[in-house]
Length: 78
Length: 215
Image 1 (cartoon, rainbow over the protein chains, first blue to last red):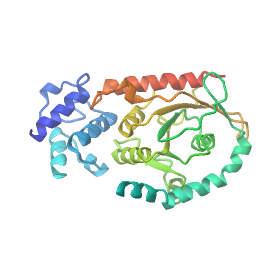
Image 2: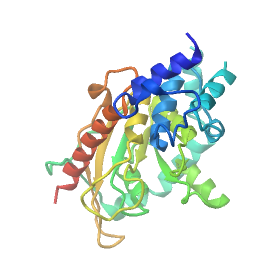
Image 3: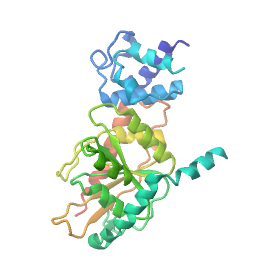
Image 4: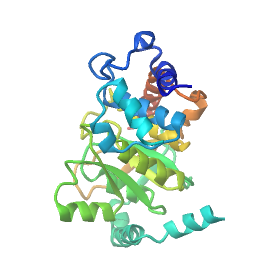
């Protein structure tokens, strides 16, 4: 499964009741378009770490703005 | 086997030596505070907390982390400290020495989360003040849900507590200790939704307010 598909699966699981995950695109901004706040980012990060068996750092987080940034970050850790 | 050895080695870090020295130095506080440990029903709290757990307490003064340390004097206690408290090299060094973990409240501080989960998985206690700052209000109205997220990741219970504010620094202190709340008992999904976590956070708030209701 592609990284994007797996990531969307995680988004859907974590934010199913608060975010419209069906229309997510790689260009979507996590904060502005999806409305994820800092604690939401942590929910997402913890779930992504579990799904992909990786660990994020604060430095990674500083560079994450869009869904595509999350994918880039995940793929840089493989 | 390797994992067991690594866990044993972790017992002897300089930070833990400093924490033990601080505990010995702070022992006289036990006499000053003559701390009463009560259950929410007003009975004497006689359990010894064992294994990894989060102590979630109200935060009405800077002394709270140390008061919780006195309440569980028989255990090493780590605590999350806001970035503002950890300013200055010497203060940062001293606080780290007594078990503080720096957390940036203005950002999604994933590294502080990792450290907290790691400490809890090694069977230590971690105190968190989930109100996110000092508040003198007796009734807790909002909590940060990161506390539940950390507990879920580490697979440990959260013990709600209430440090009863005192009139003077030397007044006898009371800490009310509630029943452990296990988030895993409420959330069994691999990926809990934000709503699931908010619901457990609300449950924790109710338990903390139950502790606070004891007069």
